[in-house]
Image 1 (cartoon, rainbow, N blue to C red):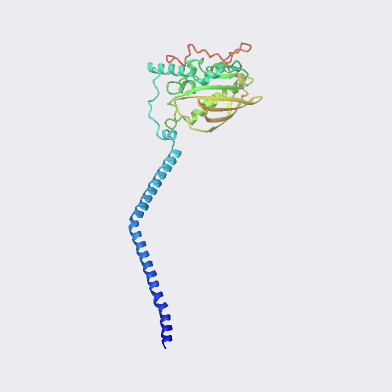
Image 2 (image 1 turned 45 degrees about the vertical axis):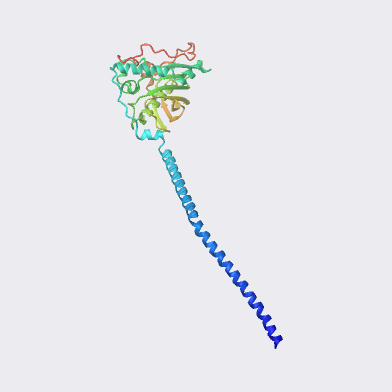
Length: 318
């Protein structure tokens, strides 16, 4: 019995010795949990502040990116040039030709023309001797100019203030004209009327065609104009023309209108035909209006400027 009691006591001892260990382990676990919970309570405010700061920074960055994208989109849709097209700067109307200020304006414009970098380069080019220079309309009598669209009705300060300065190849295969389009030549305010662009192309292409015809007379059969960009008013433009093909009484020509920066504003193709009654016409006035080329056999101009003394179109008294 005593041995059995001892055995029983031995069996009970492990049980009693294990249980305290489990209690200690549980106590430690509870302490760890309380410590972890306390740590979370102590660190939660700081973590929340960091998260809040990150959210605010994210919102600020998003707002900045949104504003940048919006500004880029507006700038792409309405760049400064487009903005001035939509809302052009106010400008006074054309000056009265009788006003002394009009003469000063025309003289200043002519001086600007003569010093254009493009014209300087053309006059100094290696092939300058293959070209001659002339000023169409300057020798047209006033009586005839009065009923001319380009030399009369559209001529004047703020409109077509200057006669074109034209350089043409001696063989009449190409021409380059420089003209000034005034502020009074607009369709939409600030933009040259598309009909005027077609008119100056027709005149320039027609001149080249006429001088290639057997009897130096031609009329427009077809003229196709493709507008590439708005042409701003009050600027010099370049009109380049080229003879594509000549078939008897038919001249096929091509041309373009360019800004002084070389940007193409419009292109054109045309067919001019010499009428059957051409031999019955007096072509002397036509040749004078076109700006007659040098006499056949005369020395090439070598790129010298066309003289314009006593130019009736530069003299508002005429």
